[in-house]
Image 1: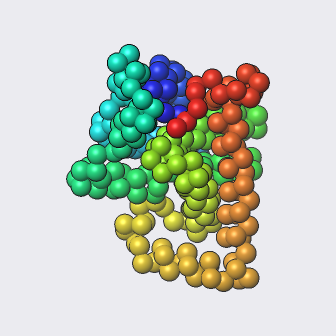
Image 2: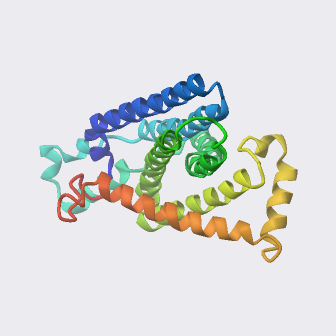
Image 3: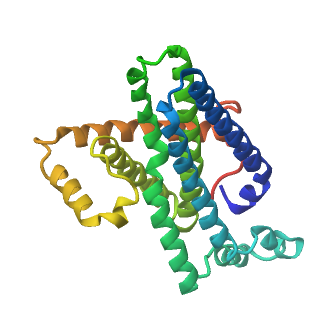
Length: 272
């Protein structure tokens, strides 16, 4: 997706964010109703998990805004006068227009924001594992179907927020490094995030522990990675979740681009 299409899709993006916000609010209301009904705050932590899932989306918008501010509109090179130029001149201007002005300060800011984004992004996928809690809520007199809907609402919110955020980063990398590096980056991000799910769910580490207890965190991770026979779960969870999330992301892209509804043709336009 190029910038022209991204710009034309602003209304769609705003609508998507609006519906995600409404859906998130609905999820919070479900928790509040449950608390009132059962006098139990058991699922209150889901609200915090959802807040963490919103952070990567905000960071991806910030990264995109900084980069786009340094990139001239591609429409500017498609005026009537420039259409009369020869193909080589037009191609040259397109290449120039797509380059990110590498001001050291802005590059550093983008790198810092991306690192923070990468630390928080696993939270959007991690929320899937909160479905485990459905089996631990039986002691409260709340219908099981209600807890299922409550948990699924948070899972859907988290996944959609995550895939939307990932797609923005994917688009940026695709634009400046090409299609291959774009997909390699997506695969690596999902792989690292799946590893993060294992670390968070089973080892109980948090994103901020990278800053609070970095040495203990990395020693714990590499100890388990280097001893697969002793800790097979780290490989099982990472691989299976990676495949699941990667396939889910592909489906998300196809639905978003309306390929299913338009005979495989991407209606937004081809990426450059």
